[in-house]
Length: 101
Image 1 (cartoon, rainbow, N blue to C red):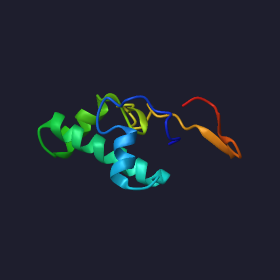
Image 2 (image 1 turned 180 degrees about the vertical axis):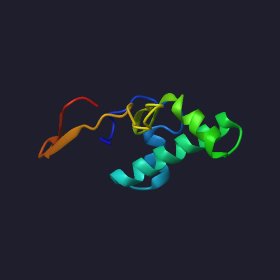
Image 3 (image 1 turned 90 degrees about the horizontal axis):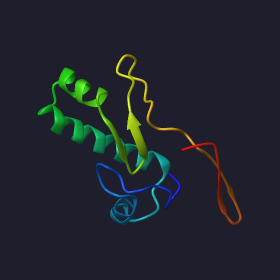
C-alpha cells in the first residue's frame, strides 16, 4: 500500500480511517490482514453464515475493492485475479511506482 494512492473502497474502511485507527503508518502485512478480514466479514454477511461452501460461493462471486485495492477470484482455481502487485522504489523525494496497480 502506498499511502494516498487508493480511491474510496466499495467495502470496509477507507485508508485514512484505517491509518487513524491503527495509530501509526501500517506495514504491508497489516494492510493485507485488514483487507482479508474485511472480505471475510463481507462474505459471511452475503452468505448468511460461516459454512465453508456458502463462504466460498460468496467469495468466488465477489468483485469489489478494499483499502488494499481490487478483489476478485477465479471461481475455478481460487486464484486472486483482482489485485495487481505494484513494484515501488523509494527515492529521496518519495515513492516511484513501476507497473500497474
